[in-house]
Image (cartoon, rainbow, N blue to C red; front, side, top):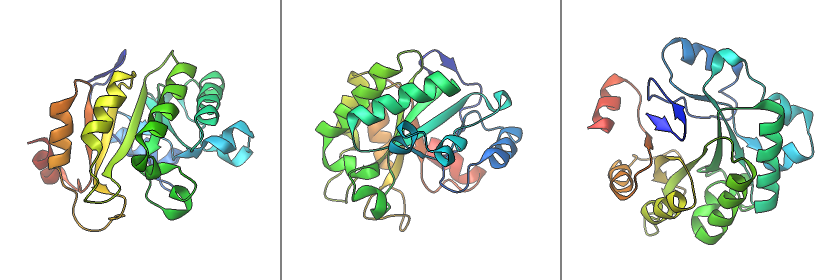
Length: 216
């Protein structure tokens, strides 16, 4: 798989998970074959304020490369500035924007999957990040939509590709589902058929068998 100019030998990605994907966990997954790992998601607001706890979550070892840093926020200017800060001080291989977190304390501020309700804001936020880190690929993680009556992943994907996003991870659930029910992998296929950039499928992959089912 190729994301921008980044060549990935093994296209299995460790999802960024708050409170889980710290350095020891990432190294374990790397040892067992993860092609790309991500930090926990970090607040764009915390980064530009240089909050030490936030910055500590970004630190990584060169042995972890290729590695992505995932950011979340609701303000295009702050997201752009935070991405620029991360690149200047840490030099990750990827900057990933979180449009997938369904947790109310994140979405009520307009961040995470709240962006699924406002594609204009999603476009503005994404453009800002891309413009501030032209040196590395910008990728997206998002959900299929806010609820089952508002599935927007195809339209969002087409827009995101058009402005320069290099890959999209789709968690094939809606915000309203949180982490319950089943992921609808048909949304992943629909998105993949609609764009030319790499699509990473996410949701309900728990073992080799479900991985193979998703690929099929």
